[in-house]
Image (cartoon, rainbow, N blue to C red; front, side, top):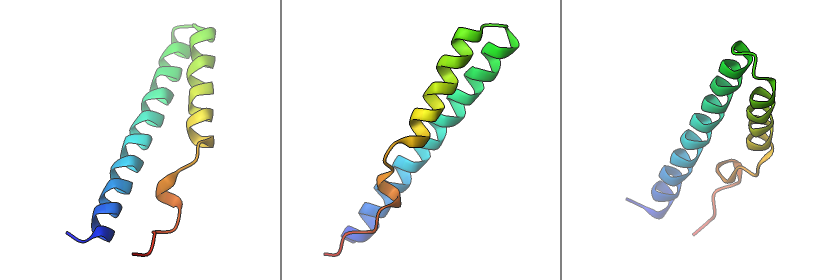
Length: 65
């Protein structure tokens, strides 16, 4: 495996993990809303906003070796 392939594999794993986190927070927000728990729903929606606003290293250009 080359360094570029290794870095790409790590980037893919980070992106997949991030996408899973966003999906879980959205699911929890919807569940809280369905249960009428507005505080919890807001907490999870805010978590989604923070995740979406974070720096995403997998979107940066690949380093040159």
